[in-house]
Image 1: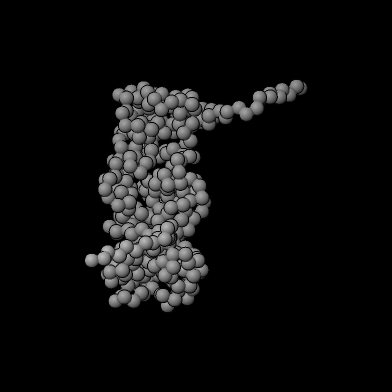
Image 2 (image 1 turned 135 degrees about the vertical axis):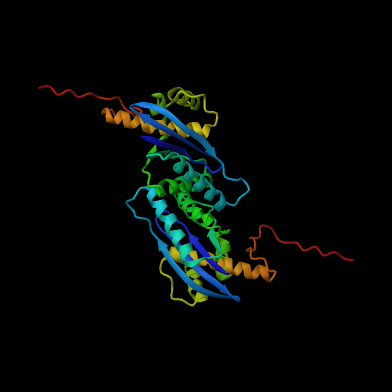
Length: 180
Length: 180
């Protein structure tokens, strides 16, 4: 299974392609797409859409993975991020790819084993799991991380283990033992 | 000049096509694009992108107009609106259309003469200016309004009149007369 992970942004969109071969992860490609800064918004989003289409054509992924967004600094930045996500999702949907969304903590959990891992810990695990040099571009590293999360999730699910990170406890858990 | 006005939304995106013929406005088409509700987000945005492409192919506009967004209820709604705008802008940019953005008050001003007109006043003026029955769908009426705004703006600009609405006065204006 070949997985395309995407980390959309209005100035820089990271992508990462990994392959899951018999439970082993193989790095295929990664990179950052940067629309021309001085172009109009429609031209920048068209560029983003076209280059994502090229990545899909070039690497023929079976499935796509993207981070869910819960917070944004402001409605303005959410709008800009939304526009970039829209351009990316159009490319994924147009290619007939199913898109899996993961929360940031699900990605951290799936890559490092901890939903509270730092950015740096995630980056180190990405390069270790894929057997590649440290990925300098954060956007590309994040894109590889969400692709890895999908690969790991699938494996855990196949093994009957829930890939969803444990919820933070809000109250002490009570085990009820039913006596026969 | 044929103008495509668009009012993007995550559930309903209005479009309106008007032609400016020797200073007279002619209605060409309008409608509302509604992605299938139960589809995934990428499929919904792909649908939106494809149908906007179809509108562009069907009506061959020379230019596009869209409302600027300044406010959103929340980052969440800004993100969803941004995604829809992204899908629409990819279609406009991909067709090589220049996209003009207008603030809500610029649209109201350009259609009714007042930047503080109500939604209903804008709707009535849209049908009067185009000589068509009242447009029921608000999204389509808004899309026609932004297309009309662009047509009017162009005309006013050609006549040397600024199409930008007057700013609200924050302090009394003082006229300085230079005596010779």
